[in-house]
Image (cartoon, rainbow, N blue to C red; front, side):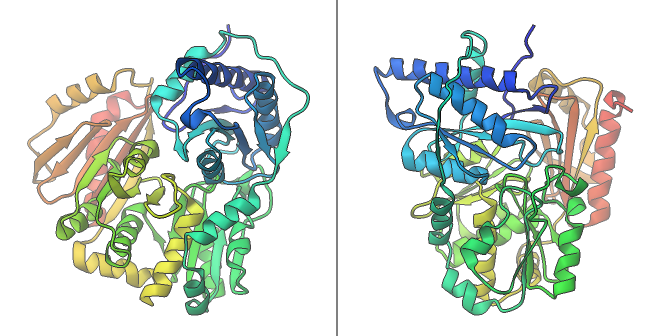
Length: 475
């Protein structure tokens, strides 16, 4: 019996050679082709976002280029007019081309996951496909036997993507104002070399740019535990800033001029305040429920609407695409904002350029930008811990309701103000501090998040959560 294909928060992923195989890639590619054919028949021919060619991209993981070629061959055999990108590029480059050419994008990547993983992301109209699309593709798996074509079209889109990046940042201001070294950490991923092409600055220092499918022995995720090399490089070069990209360069991590890592709960309000005060953005701020409280405080002060949505960047991106929101963020380092020529997609490269622009325009260092936020809106000490549990939670809603019944009226001496159950359970206290427990829907994992104004209080919230999930821990 063939392995089931299930798309999670952002794509289908599996261990290479065990789950992610050439055979399974062919099954997914055939399902994608059948889904698109069905959609075209419903609309009596090619229409809208599915009328253009299929763009097939890949990152620098082990065999990603070969997997991508296999997918393109199946799509070609089904008359989907695929174009295989000639080089490894970031996922946002594929999203950009789907917006430009009007087709669907298939990106071979496992994003920030360990080196043993690979996966497939689906892009439509410049952003991640929503659940109705991925469920539709899942429904077509194995209903038709895949066939392959020998010849496919291959084309480079590197220059197109570089020009897109250049058009969305104030490069003259960055080049004229930032004189100290800028360190870019590509984490051996698909973003390597691109910042050099965009900025063309002599003071740019790029680390971990060499192609390495093992990612230097760490996960290609731009979070503190994997950014020691970046922090050290910033200190060694006496740099102005450290900018990190994940494996497929759609997520971003920030290290200040002192080599200190800033969390997404600190970076997002810095971005939001700049866009509001300097760029005059006025529409809604949207964020995933796992992100912090500071952006909401900014929105309240500026009389701007604010909304929290389930985890998964596709949810917040839809608000930008629909014209409802101007600024979007997620806890895992994904950010997007509205603007001429932009797309509703997270992009680590664009975020890095925006941070440089913020520094150039304000004349402030990253630590000074953060200090301004902290002074005006409060401190943020955020932490996340993932726990392995006995088995995956099959029914999130039922799990949440059972947990609500067990809750005390106070946590760490502070009354509970609000319960948010759009994705797991987020407990918001009267002082704004919060705790989120969110079971994964696809693997035996419990993700626990907390934020407060003191590190010891944040840890106290996490310790309390561990007691609640302890009976299910896989230890």
